[in-house]
Every structure is written in C-alpha cells, then in structure tokens.
Length: 178
Length: 159
Image 1 (spheres, chains in turn green, cyan):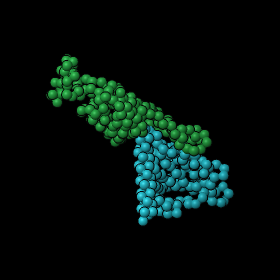
Image 2 (cartoon, chains in turn blue, orange):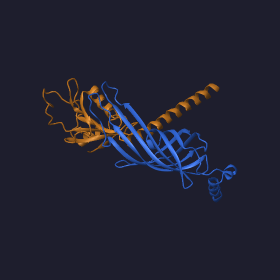
Image 3 (cartoon, one colour):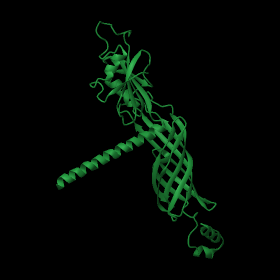
Image 4 (tube, chains in turn cyan, yellow):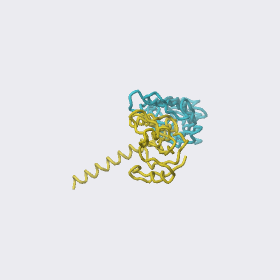
C-alpha cells in the first residue's frame, strides 16, 4: 500500500513517472455509471445513475435512482391501480484494486405508495400510504473496470423505516460505466 | 430409459421454476409490504343487499396486497358489506383463524356473531341466517374444527 501511495504522489507531479508507473492509483476509474438494480435500495428495482469522484486517494460515488410500479390489483371493472415508487440516494466508498471493489454506502430511499381502489372507488390503504423515508445502506461487491464498460454488483442492502423496522434486503445490479 | 430420464429432468426443471417463481413472489411481496402496499379489509356477511344470503359471520384479511380484490369478490360473490379495516368487534362470540398460507403472507379470520337480537333475524319466521349460526364459544370451536368448512384447518380465536 505505501508503494501505491508513492506512485500516486509521483504520478501527480511527474509526467515521466505517469508513463512508467507500474500500477495506476487506486482512485483512478470511470466518472459515471448507469445501472439497473433488482431489489436493492430501491426496494423492488431501480434505474440509477452514479457519479464517481476521488478524494484522499480514495474512490467515492453518489448515486440517485428511481423506480415506478403500477398494478391493477382487482380485476373488477372500475378498480384502481396500486402505485409504488421509490427514489434511492446513496453515497458509497469503493475500496480495493480495480476491477474488484468492496462497496460500503449509506443513504435514504423515498418511498411513495398510493393504495388500490375497488370497483366502487373505495381505497384500501395502510398507515404508510403516501410519501415515506427509509434509511438504507450497502455492503457489497462491485465489478468496476478502471476503463469503464460493463459493471455489475451484488450486496446486502437493508432498509430501516419508522413503523416497519428493519428489512434485511439485498440486491443485484448490472450496467455500464464510462 | 432415456424417455423416463428426460421426463424426470423435465419435472425437476418445472419444479425448480415453480419454486423459483414462488421465492421471487415471496420476496416481491415482502418488499411491497415494507413499502406500505398491504392493507386490511373485511367482508361482513350479516349485511347483504338484495339477492344475497346473510350469514352470521364476518371475514377479515389482515396485511394483504389484494384488499381491493377481496372487497370486489365480497360484493360480487356474496352481495355482502365490505370496507377497509377489521370486522366490527361488537357482538362477536369468537372466531376462527384460518391455517392458510396465502402468497402475500396475509392472515384471515372469520368472526362469528351473536345474532339473536339481530333486527331482521325472525322477520318472517324462517331462519334469516344461513347455517352455521353459533350461539356459544363451544359452537364456534366446533365450526373451526369442521374440515368441510375449513379444509386447511382453523384455530379458535378471540378478538
């Protein structure tokens, strides 16, 4: 690790050293990624964009995403749909040599539910109907090539919500880094 | 032998897919429930509209994703009174907690009422409520234990 840090310092100050460095800095890598996550911080699924940045010779990412599901629960004529939407926002630290990264993150997911109605228009809702917030986290693995390209990950993504407690949850994702 | 082996393999694949679908459904239900998509609903069979047959019980489903479907079924199949929430607690003798494994992890109770003083009970001298009509906790316990009524089994419960 000290050798890597030394390479980082020299690469920042000398063009010759940049050309001859044996290993690029751990903080190098793509600036962006887009990915689809199944389950995970967005609850059932989410489409996400993540912006990477480097600080203190480490790699970080800020991610935002969204999901939207609408489903007609009752088959009766006139029945209304259930709507479930989520907006996960997660800040992550990526550790390890490319392309294999340990991901540790914290964030929140905004959850929105609109209950389905029956054929008479009567709503069947829980106490959580409307907008709510759940705290969330990520402990996982991410395949993130230094030069970008296909990326995927898998991890433990628990959610914590007042009134509902802890949901031990997980997710898997795939996408493109650039 | 080859044909038998391929059939066995086919059956295993179907079983694996069915099992995977069941697991996926179960996970999705868990997530939707956490999101707040599940609700409670009741179907009060005592109060029916014209054409319906009154029964001396009310069925409630707790924590279901299909509350609106349950309500529409209650109205369409039984002409009964439905709504969000739990069955009315007044006049309940006891109930049966159904031993069913619903795909959305919901719980179902049938609550049996004391209908002796029901306004329409003896309007024309004929029995107003379809059987069974319970008059005691022991009678409700017998209903719960009746396999023709509850093939999956049911346990005596109190509100």
